[in-house]
Amino acid sequence: MTDPLALLPLAAASRGGSIDDIPAAALVAAGLTLLQRSAPLVRALAGKRAGILLPTSPAFLLALAASEGRGAVLMNPLAAPRELAYQVTDADVGAVLTISSLAPRLPPDLPRVLLDDAPRTATVIAGGVTRTVDLGSHFALEVEGDPDAPGSPEEAAIVYTSAMHGRPLGAILTHRGLLASARGTIAVADIGPAERVLAALPFSHLFGLVASAVCPLLAGASVTTVSRFRASSAIAAMESGITMFVGVPAMFVALLAAIERRGTPFQPGALRLCIAGGAPLDPVVQDRWFDATGVELRQGYGLTEASPVALFNRVGMPNARGTLGTPFPGVEVAIRDVATFAPVPDGSTGEICVRGEIVFAGYVRGLGTPPAAGLEVRDGWLRTGDLGLRRPDGAFLFRGLSKAMFTRNGFNIYPREIESAVRELSGVDSAAVSAIPDPAHENEIALSATGSVSEEQIRAWCEERLSAYKQPATIAVTPSR
Image (cartoon, rainbow, N blue to C red; front, side, top):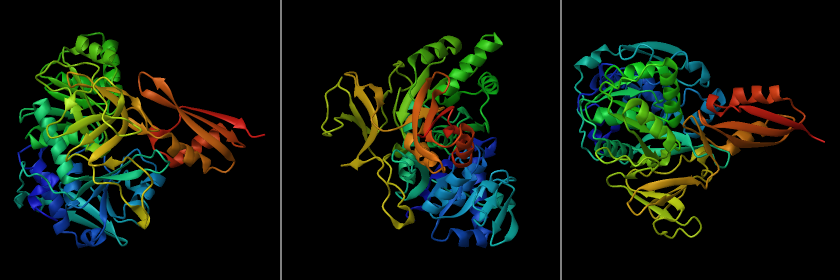
């Protein structure tokens, strides 16, 4: 480890921010106390990565601190046990920080830490022995961090993504890249210590973690978490002192529907900033949102491998609805020819390419073998697989995908991953996945298969092996001849 003050959790705790009224410094101190007081956990993590399987909650920051600077695999609570087992093996995870309701999804013999009572106590289960660790002494622990430290170039987080070829890859994000992305967000969104952020996106989703947790904490602001998004509750919070809300387009569609259902005008209160990302945003939704709330809905652009945001419609400038915005400070964005990689002129469509500290450090090389092909970094430029163009005024437009994926509720859907899982079912001869456009969810998933199986068998197979958001909405089976 290089500079201990250059780690993301310490930097996030250094300006006096809080999550659910718990000081960030106390959460980080509790995570460090957990390591100090649990030799079995330290042994389990020796030479290995940590895993974090938690809902959006204050315990997430504690878990990041307890990872002690090593790469922490951010595991989606919606993931199926089979997917979690793959990540544990592929990333060489030594122990997982989780809660009792999610722990049964993990491989049975894997050491785990239950954080149901965090930050007061933690339960460490390792080697067949269960120990309760009192974290109360963390109140006497001084947490020292530097919010302006450039950040360590070492691993901070691993997020599994980019399954274009059928197998998810663990993208490695560094402390430096994540802190650069968070600081860029603070600059372009004009975020300060008075901000009150409603965090409704999962922290296992990098966009949710950086934009609605790390970023406001670095600014000394307060975060209120939502373990499960409900449009009516989110509206009530936004009318009661929340100043900033970050979501995916499907959330804003749901919020607009809820406002229309209740039949009374939205009262924005202190709400000043709404950010959408994770999927293409229809400018019609931006128009409707402004008409309903009086607050601009500002779109950004990024991806996991870019830590995760590179473009944004800056606060303090007119919101260019329908565009992805302009580059973050210190980030270069260019449009290049998909085939030749040569730059293309403004107004021409090509591949969106990103360069800067936010670019990821590569993929996990699981099982001692080179990873399957993911996104390429050439001469420092991350080739995103997304198509776009740059206008003469410097704003970028999204123009589709050159990679095999689509989005559903802000989550990436990789057809080959689902097809590969379905083909493992005995009796399936072939499988094909396609997108069904759906204004409420961006897209739904259609699966067609051939073989001697039933729709019910395929559905049960998918429920056992794939995340909840990867479940097909429609399944059509053609009997083999």
